[in-house]
Length: 65
Image (cartoon, rainbow, N blue to C red; front, side, top):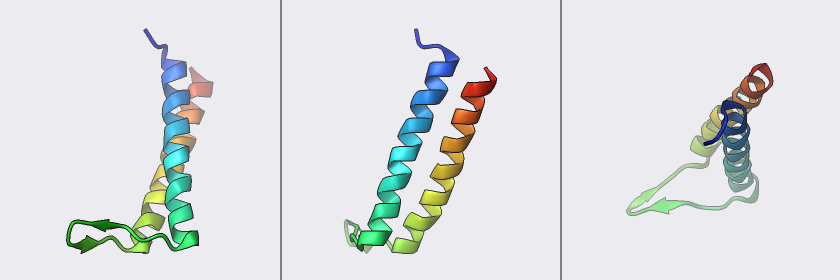
């Protein structure tokens, strides 16, 4: 069984990696098409900010526990 501290570290790392990929999408101009819909780059910026907050919060909780 995984401890709470390890869970927060793993989730913080995953959130951070996914956030970096969203940031790279905006910087490098990668397109993303989901079926007939084109997902705009500004949505990746919103996701990047949200994921950065979640990653920060997870690592902060890992230190508290």
